[in-house]
Length: 150
Image 1: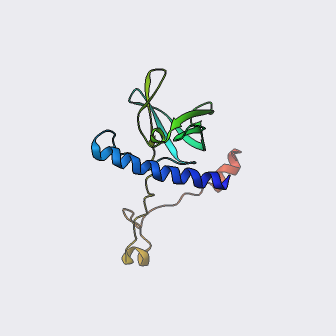
Image 2: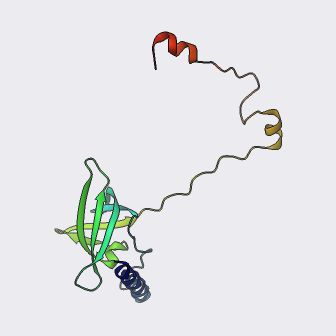
């Protein structure tokens, strides 16, 4: 299986180079990095977002530049489907299923927002932004036991 993965990676790099050549001559648009296993994608149906999916597995097909792509559709109930797609389709190119336009778009996860930094004055006084020193803490420990809430 490890050799197979290296082969897929080499084919992906070759395919990306083809896309750049096509884009230069105006035949095809250039696509972002091809989605890989465990990537999240948004599936578009007729140019409208339909469902999120996670790529579970990408295996080569008998035809060159075609792959068996196993997708976990993130919906209720969860569903696993396998589509046979060309490498450029996995990279974001539009394709059709039963005459309907489809497209996969890789989801880029945003970076987490870091908490605001505290100033030296806040650290020494114990105050946080927007709070004054007259805040009151209410303990619920005794009330929960008396009312029987756990």
